Image (cartoon, rainbow, N blue to C red; front, top):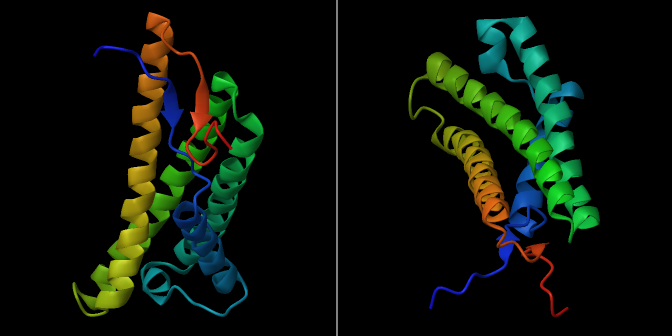
Length: 163
């Protein structure tokens, strides 16, 4: 009843996570290519909008690359933990970018004036923040399991043992 089970990392390489990361890359690409203007950020400060789009682009790319790199680290718990640390840091920055845009939208237009946009931007920020929390939780579980010597294998859920 108290048998230890192998520790499993929740894989960032699932369709929802990668889709959110690709969306997080597409938004600043559109802004850089002048297809989308973060007008609410520009209304606060034009340099803020420029910095926002580049920071979001760079860190969304880093988060996506980390997610894809996880497939190369499978089976090596230390490497897997290093990869998710990079993903966590980049995803935290992505989350902060989305919350910054949400705050600018609310400041400029008021709460609920662009409900779909606010919902999507706030939702992406919240989902990114949840992923960071998930990584922190699983990293803590991994360190605890290593201290007690109960880690036998580490694998991502997206790649089960039997396949």
